[in-house]
Image 1 (cartoon, rainbow, N blue to C red):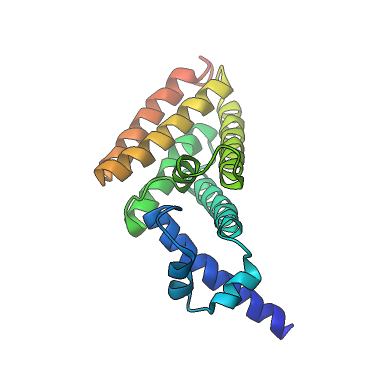
Image 2 (cartoon, rainbow, N blue to C red):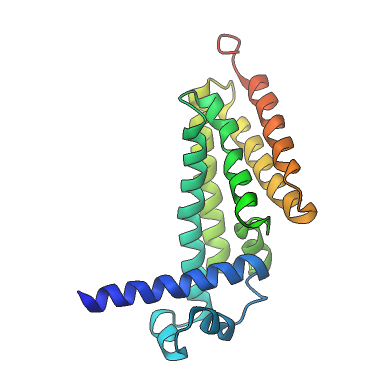
Length: 195
């Protein structure tokens, strides 16, 4: 049991260091030596848990997927019980991210751009986007959108655009603007009985 706890703490420490570095500098901008130094583990310890950088990147992206989708859901739920309000509330997760550490863009877009088309990193990125879009479609259906898939795609584009513009401009206002645009967009998609 003690060995498992130690292993879990070591893996968590490595992933935390890798996440911070990958998010700020990109996948290509970070070498294994930097992760070793930032995590404070020996090289052999890192390689016991992650045989290659690709394995480490995959673990980082899977952990980020779970964490980020959790933050989106929490922000949506905090907006209230109505699905239309929850779709707008999603953008509060972006505001929280900016307030926590500034914008370094979307880790999934960055991973997709930096990774070969046939890589595990790109596959994880696509899976993340598909899961996010399925959830947004579900919320759009609950909100009463005439075309839930179209609304979900458009909300997804606003999220991705806000993250990209936030990275470029380092301005929190882009998320406020995306949130406002989402509010108008959602109203335009609601069926007349729900509007």
